[in-house]
Image (cartoon, rainbow, N blue to C red; front, side, top):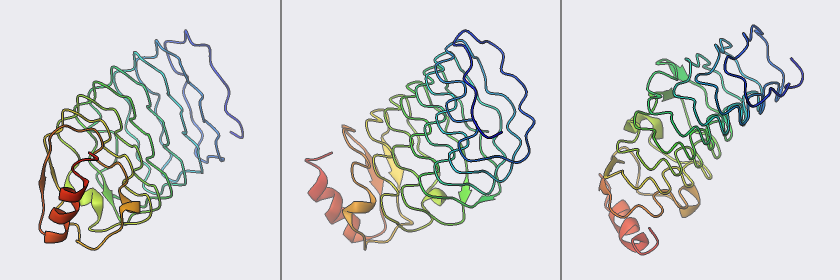
Length: 219
């Protein structure tokens, strides 16, 4: 498909999407604000296009689950805001593939933002990071207690990769950052844990301890 059709907000069953080759922004906002849609349709494509699923289910407030997303080659903004505001989605643990994934710029940005009941996050294995790849990914997920495993950080940083990733995740109490180096700039992680009242951070480098001590008043 070359352009995304918009469906009526009362739709309760998603149509079957059989395309095997995607065009940029082909399904962007397709089901936006379809508040009664309970789950997403099958999306079998393994190589994505820029923005192909951007904001696809934004505002689907009664969506409780999403089907497996098997793609292993991502594209810029491909999942950006995909499930943003899906208030009732609690379990996303099986959403992403268990094999290695090639990330792209802002690929997961805002993917689960404002999913207030999300508890179980996906497990994924990125080959490397890209600019903004996790920006605001779980922002305002106020029920989230356990973040993804440490492998998602790939032991490093790129520009804006973690910006606001866990901003306002007020139920989180700990996170393992022991795989990360102590040499970094704040541009990598602006607002990473912003507004969380208390969080225990597992570190291996003294530089992190100095950083979080200096940022405590901001977080």
